[in-house]
Length: 354
Image (cartoon, rainbow, N blue to C red; front, side, top):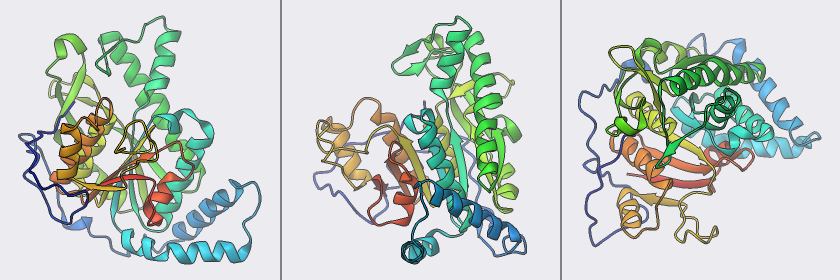
């Protein structure tokens, strides 16, 4: 996968800072970045349409029903009122959300994530949804008597496995998520990295062992702007093709991070199976709520960030170095963790800043 270049730590490291450390990661060669004028949100006739009213009504009714009974009117009004400053802060901003892990396997958590997305979209956030689907791929490989095989946490992807990955991610998981979002009151459009050359892939350096596992060579998000500007939610499967048309399996975290950078997103959110970055890996109560890039480098050097968290952290650091304002690793096992992260000061995991 695309890895960040970690430079030596300085002796003075802070856990939070407003400074930018854009030199920390070098963007890949020939990487396309788009900052068109139409990224600026405008209240057009489309955004003032009845869509907003019907969408918001649908999502709020779903949110109420998730509690098993109606929220008392005064409490509901108080909740909406307290959310106003956060809605104003993020309204019109692009938020890229990577979806996977436990939040994808559990139907109740999946429902929670979808309701969150629709609600955020209805109040004016521009949501781009990137997903993987490892457990579903494993399920179908097993049904077809193909043994899932992993090397250093990456799926070994031969030609037969790549065919299953494409069918499951693009044909099944992607369209299922689109259907759920549409049912919840928003309008989603399902895509993969192949569509419109959104991602152009290149072989992973360890392709001899990993097969068709790819890195991202270039990103061209121009296909997404008309969708985002007309209140659609792009739902993107992490499959891409190289210049010869060969399909590759792309890590969904990497895809989300590179896309967030190319879109000039305000925020990248990775839904994971952990509470966030921990000061002590054995103590879930030692959550680091906010940390800057220098603090991340320190924790990697000290071994406090290790294993499967390293690619996720590198993905976040890389996106910030390319212009994304903040990146958060949040616990997808917590119901409505997206709303906690965006609409509260408390958040739902670790936020990484420049």
